[in-house]
Image (cartoon, rainbow, N blue to C red; front, side, top):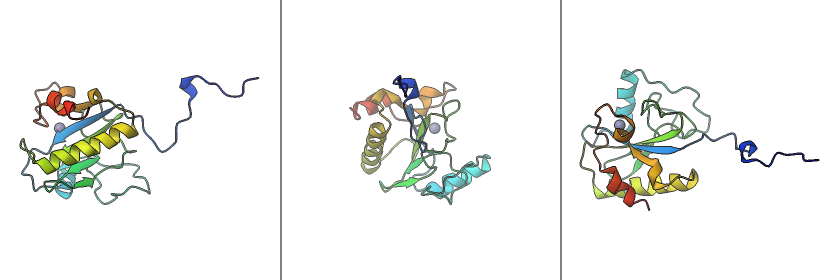
Length: 160
Ligand SMILES: [Zn+2]
């Protein structure tokens, strides 16, 4: 007698993961020097609040930030929410996505682009995603948004 169901539906999924189907790219639409703490303040003002912060979260200090990663002006990145937490960055698609924000409005420097590409590539491997699963905010929100002010078709070519 079969003791386990071999169908993919019942495949074991580790408890510390979320079903991620896309990565969403944003920009802060602010001067590039504004970083993770500033964004946290803006998001607190908008009423965002992290609930169920896991004990192992690397950032337990910023209680409101809606993004998972912040790519800073100097090319480093800061951690916002833990990947296990549902973000607050894209209406209707938060549950199954990771949100990354580039600091700046529409001109991002080479260090930032290099960092965001390597970060996205790591996440693509981790969550078995393809370039088509990496989307700009404007591609998911048809309300006239331009965020992150990057040509995503050209950007995705760099992820192949
Ligand atoms: Zn956005």
